[in-house]
Image (cartoon, rainbow, N blue to C red; front, side, top):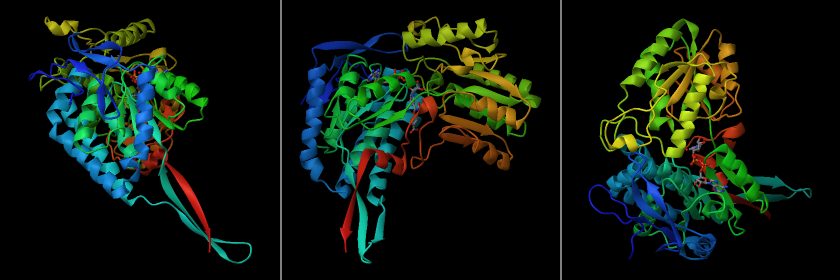
Length: 497
Ligand code: NAD
Ligand code: 6OH
């Protein structure tokens, strides 16, 4: 049996990454390179799915709904999803190595966040689906008798899943796990920048006894490639997407023709508000993580930090020292905290904002350029962790998502001013508030125009909670029952008694 990701040796030298359709690993007519962002080397050739392979994947997914998978009860589906989690855990090092090679993220991060969360995503939704109920109503009828209404959950059918490159396996499984828990079949289109773990997961699905055709992977790009072919497909019942807001808008146009339900987790320009009464060291540590984790490539990252004026200078100085202490280097080194950005193109985008910040009149507190290593890493897509001050609230660098290791810090005098500045954005994904006055924490959290607010923490996740954004940050909520509600259709049954 051909394996989807051909690997050799301890260094995880990946050779070719294949599509996975109807239980078979499939090549395409064309290939594209998969590049290691740490040194610019090509680590794999990826099989691109053309329209006919996307058709094959969708019809494999449709057939699988009518096969063994469609007949399985909830309990047995949950057992299989736990087996998927077990299999991810048993190949932990392989997933970590693939994710690190594809994304350039530090091995410490992939081991702590991405791969454990993939397993947790399967376990959580396997458990939730077993206990999730739906409403029932005893209804009085006009003739004085009664009827019983109750709803059951049915799968949507074939779900198209399109994911980005920043947390590839975490975000894919965040959608795949609840979709499968609800009894759907899926066709996944991972980012062209990070194809490896989606195909590795296919090997795991096979081992875990997920029937052929239930989980399919097509590789390729967005417009006029696998992404668009999938969203256009008339036999795909719903599309769930994580990525840029503009891409969400393009997908929305495409799916409008066939009125497909969508769930969108999109970009952010998230604010952090730091009050003078915060635990100073904890706030500096927390904001440093919120700005620089994954080289700033997390949709939840704080790119706007508002600090009460009385501690502003001290805070900026402490954040500068924290940024300068971060270990930048090879993602495979255990001590590395900051890896490269995902691609040369994305680095150019981030550097264009570094130039723009200067042109807009920013003070560069630290960073603003490219680090030098004197090694092969100089061919990687690194930028320096960067902190700016001094921009006006209308500056483009304060308004637009940069998606790099960078923030702007601005002072505020009153609570109202801080709330107004934090909310003055077209995005609305997440916010964090740092204060030891919990009354104030609650008060401000309730005024934030976002989907997720953290108080004295950041990116602390309970997978049962609603996750998503307002405005340009998305449509709908996933997490816990919210995911089940998207990935299933309630069918209400009314019985006259
Ligand atoms: P992207 O929008 O460029 O690409 C995401 C995916 O969409 C890729 O698989 C891509 O091939 C595909 N795609 C692109 N155009 C398409 C089209 N026309 N039709 C169908 N598919 C298409 O995003 P990215 O650059 O990979 O990721 C970074 C962005 O994702 C940032 O804006 C970030 O904020 C956002 N993001 C949001 C969340 C969230 O939960 N809100 C999570 C992670 C990332
Ligand atoms: C965006 O980059 C991070 C998204 C995180 C989640 O979707 C999650 O479930 O933690």
